[in-house]
Length: 106
Image (tube, rainbow, N blue to C red):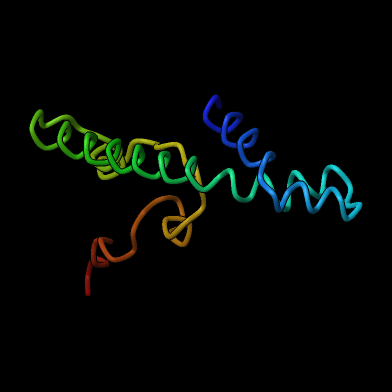
C-alpha cells in the first residue's frame, strides 16, 4: 500500500501527467489512465516475486515436512473450499472421472 502511494505520487510529478492535465483531461482520467497504470508496474513486479516465494515455500513445507496440504485433503474426499473456478469445476462433486472405479460385473 505504501509503495503504491509513493509511486503514484512520484508519477504524478512526471511531464506527461502534467501535460494531460494541461490538455484539460478530467482528474480521474489523468490519475487512472496515465498515473496509476505506470505506477503499478513496480508494485506488480514486487507482488509477483513474493507470490513465487510463497509458492516455493509451500512446496518445501509439504515435501520436507510431509505436511498434508490441499491436494492430500482433496484426494481423501474431504471438502476443500474453492477459491476460484478452474479446471476442477468440470468434475461434478469434486470427483475426477479419470479415477473412477470400473462398474461391477463388466
